[in-house]
Structure formats: C-alpha cells, structure tokens
Image (cartoon, rainbow, N blue to C red; front, side, top):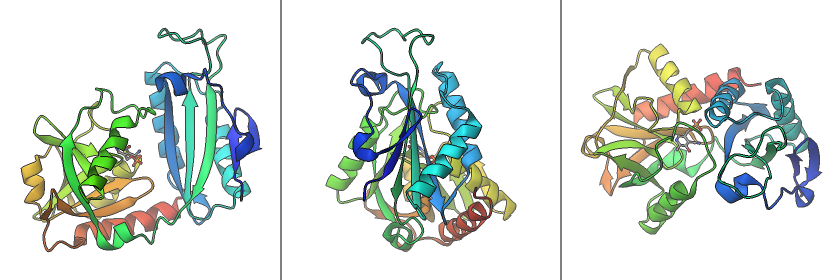
Amino acid sequence: MSRTVYVNGDYLPEADAKVSVFDRGFLMADGVYEVTSVLGGKLIDFPGHAARLRRSLKELDLTSPVSEDALLDIHRELVRRNGVVEGMVYLQITRGAADRDFVFPDPATTTPTIVLFTQAKNLIDTVAARRGIAVISIDDIRWGRRDIKTVQLLYPSMGKMMAKAAGADDAWMVEDGVVTEGTSNNAYIVKDGKIVTRNLGNEILHGITRGAVLQFAREAQMEVEERPFTLEEAKAADEAFVTSASTFVTPVVSIDGVALGDGTPGPVARRLREIYIDESQKAAL
Ligand code: PMP
C-alpha cells in the first residue's frame, strides 16, 4: 500500500512526493533530520526531538518552514493517515532549492524544504533486543560537529557495511583511543554496576534516548558516569549497550569478537530497556 508523505505543506501519495534536483539537501547534504519512534500509535519523546531539531537548525542558520506546534500536528496526522501503530516518523529540513553555490542562498528568496514520512516497523520485539548485538570498532573519521543532526550519513552507512562484512551487527567509532558512539546510536558500558557513557560535546550526537535513559537510570538509583572510555575498557566491561530512538536500549554482547560477560544481554541493559519502554509510553503524545 502506498504511504502518504508530507512535502512542503501537502500530504501526497509517495509516488507523487518529490523535491527539486537543485535541493541543497541532495547536492550538499545541507539539511538536518529527526527520527521519532511510534509505539501504540503515539509519538515517543516528541518534545525532545523538537528541541534538538531547533538546536540543529540554529547551528546551521536554518529556519523551519513550519512552527513547532504545526510540526506535532503533521507528525500525528501522518501517523493517523498511514495507520502506524509501531514504527517511526522521519523528518528532514534542508536549505531548499537554489543555484548550486557553496555560499548559502538568500533566505528571503529560498524556502527550506520539509519532508516527513513514516515507516512501520517492529521496535519492541526484535532479535537484537532478545539476543543482543555484536559490534566491531572502526576509526571515527567524521566531521567535528557531530552534535548537529545533519543528513551527512555516508560514513555511518559505510560503518554499518564494514560491520556487515565482518559478520557483526554494528560498529562503534573510536577517536584518540576512546569510543565516541555507535554509527547510529550512543554507546555505554557497565562495570561493577556503574554505567559509563561518553560525555556530551561536539564529538557525539546528543541522543534524545540517551538523555531519557540516563535520567531513568539515576531515578532507579543506578550509578552513572559521563566520561570517555577506551576500547580496552569496553572489552573488559561486564556488559554494554546502545541507545537510539528506534532501538531504545539494545544490549551489546561482543566487541571485535570479544564476548562481554557470558555473551548474553546483561541485566542492566535488559532492565533499562524495560524501564525506557514503559516510561516513554506513559508520556507518549
Ligand atoms: N548517535 C548517532 C550518530 C545517531 O545517528 C543517533 C541516532 N540518530 C544517535 C546517536 C541516537 O540518538 P537518538 O537517541 O536521539 O535517536
């Protein structure tokens, strides 16, 4: 069945949803995005995603073509029109279509492009959650503003391919001897009951799920330390996990072929996944 897609003010059948070949998102990856998950037909942590979007736009001197209230309405309307019960809503805003030039076009004459679409997908009951995932380590050679959620995803995409070629599920990126994050998720280790994850900065994306999970962990009296950790530390950890909007909390059971603990999902990751799914559903919009 054809989906309904939102493009620049219109709800269209996906075959009719088009953007210009001159769009700067296409030519220069000059755009930002958000992925908000849907559980029970409701949006998980929309305010968090809206806040990060606002920040990404500001950092790139981009203006949203629609207000934040309208954005929530569009998300909900798309979920309704497509009958999504479990899955996600993808949102992208680019600087719009203009003659190709490295200099930003005049915002007075170039309107940003906005596109939203849905993807139905099982998020709660997944093989990755049940069995945990295997990750490999790769060099983090991305640009220096990873805190902005831009659509330049070529290296993360290559990282997933490197993982696949190595028979693993994903890759953790390493820079200056310490783990930054996963290709599309934030990375955590657990040692002696303490949860360790990279502190926020320009080096990683400020995961919305990360923020929520750390809050839930602290509320559950778990010890949390936000600091860089090395690959060696990670391989010697009791357990590890990743977080993202569409995978929630997913256990990591091996790194570069080294099994963590007994090689099955650890208790902290399993508990945090449960808490996150429960709590975020209670607050869903
Ligand atoms: N880091 C990177 C590089 C990502 O691409 C993502 C997912 N977009 C995350 C972390 C997790 O962020 P969130 O929890 O907001 O999905």
